[in-house]
Length: 222
Figure 1 (cartoon, rainbow, N blue to C red):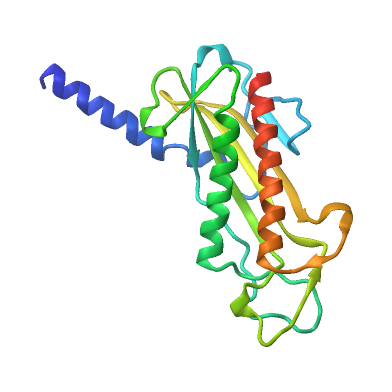
Figure 2: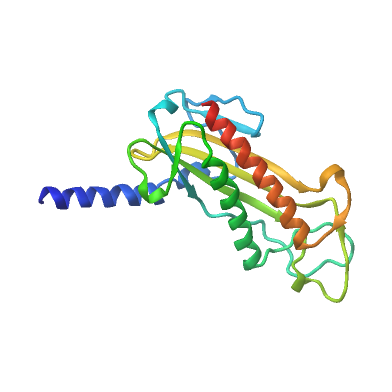
């Protein structure tokens, strides 16, 4: 095989591995520390572990990889009995949630002190891959099509979600950091607010922005 063809072949293998090769960090329902990892001090996450061999100064760029979000199965129709329930999100609401997450984390990771944010397809030997997902998304707000008539509901909690993050070496896929945090999507000071998608998305955006800012602080401190 000629040198130019070999280089193209190895580059293709590298890109495929970088884009698709990081699923294991989020496998399973329980977050356990990877073997040999140490606890990482953070105020932002419920659990966080770091590879003691991780040296942030080895990297100059970061690239975000989004894993698939997963949603807790719920009801399709509004429960008129007044109980708090989990409702299935519409495909449009799922799309909006993903867009909100991408906007929040892209903005913050683009402001890292010691790293330049690049596209995942541009990852190279000095790139730290930041893999993010939202897990076990619970939604307490029925979409408009799920409400029959003019029923109004008022809520303090609009749902709950777990944010999971993992950092990898872009070249060899070595896991360097793993963390997660679960939060309720709730109103400020537990005030009741109309239980509609406008308010739900607003409070979800606030939480995503808090996570994104926290992740920036954690990476800057590494």
